[in-house]
Length: 109
Ligand SMILES: [Cu+2]
Image (tube, rainbow, N blue to C red; front, side, top):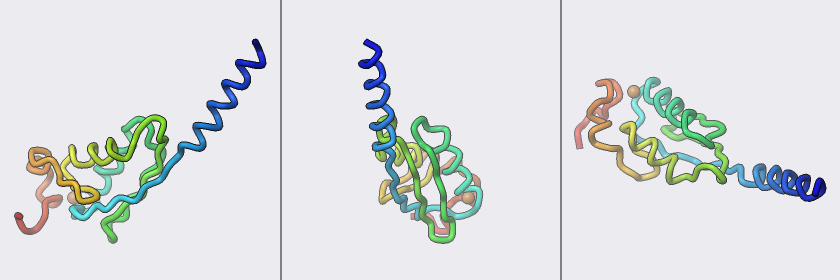
């Protein structure tokens, strides 16, 4: 019995570290530092996200997450839901409208 429990724990630990994934994000609608903070904070509050680094200059980001808990689609949906586009997926229009003026794109399209 003890042996079984131990192997279950060992298996769980192994599968956890094996499912740590990272993904690049194309964040082409970022405008200012507030945008990158918004994206970082909203992703860090998402369960399963381990790390997020936004590169404002290159309008990109790198996210590290536990694939057992969260997937890239959920991460992208979180970003679009707060008003930013990611990896070609468009920002939620209502959320975009609520962004600060500095966070909106210079031209409306
Ligand atoms: Cu901004």
